[in-house]
Length: 138
Image (cartoon, rainbow, N blue to C red; front, side, top):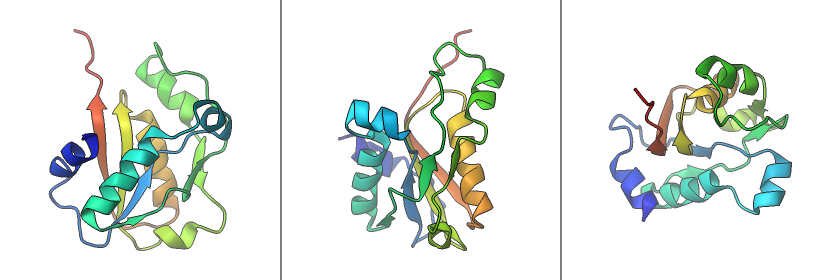
């Protein structure tokens, strides 16, 4: 299973007691898709590592257009200020280590936006695990 592989490849310095946070989908995309694949992976990883799963800490405030085919700079610009900590959930991140989970990383723009939101809530350290990494054509 994918979550088993991700657990084996998790950051080796991941401290005990970290919280597991998936990359959020915008509500309209979640309704259309009916599931958040990053949240499903994050939930399985949290169970396997006996860590707290926090699926609702981050939210995508604005619907972004597809990042497919966009340059690195365009991707970062598209997701800038699109992800935030859900109101009232800041305390879940404060002084905690965070394991961010995403299914696919291309440029890192979405993960950077998530990390920025976690950082704004004064988390300790941010660790990232992804299922797949898109390789740039050379």
